[in-house]
Length: 117
Length: 113
Image (cartoon, rainbow over all chains, first blue to last red; front, top):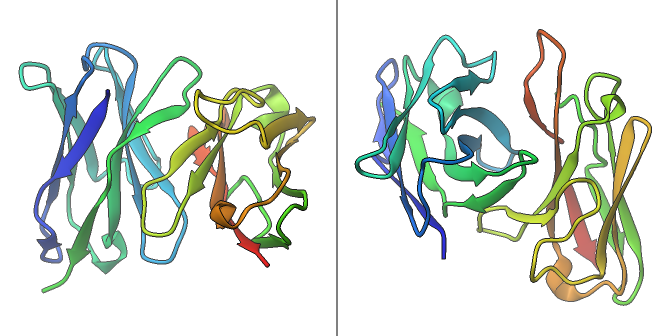
């Protein structure tokens, strides 16, 4: 079955860059949408952005100046980079796959990233 | 503040029926874009519950149903069970130039009494 697994540092210092990777198994990254979503502790879901299988991207306007989502087809992975982080970026970060009607069908388990010195 | 508005909380007794609303606008739900619903059990990742307004993925009990009308959508849960206690989120697409393309509602906490 399709599985997604986030990986990356759990602690990032303020003003530095948050980098996460999502490894996909049981499916090819050469189809549909591959997305990042985050959830601050005790709060709701916030969509960060997606990369379409063609390579095109779409980002949340509130994060667009700091976000890059890229794909590594050889490793069946996609990645998130968020620059100039602050404490407000502390959250559980999820990677997910969305299909034809843009519903998020498969989710990773999530990884907590804390921004602190 | 989410552009899709959900009640912060709803509650019901076992066996009862509850509904969760998701109110949008003419640039998202009202424009005809699909609404999807997710269930997030405590400490776990969200799970797709309803897609395309009223479709259930394989494995989701038929106690869960979705509907859409105008600028709003609803999730209904019948025969409420203790295991339904969770947070529920709606999601839709927004076409406004300054908005967020993929929107989530603020979430609704369901308490089973």
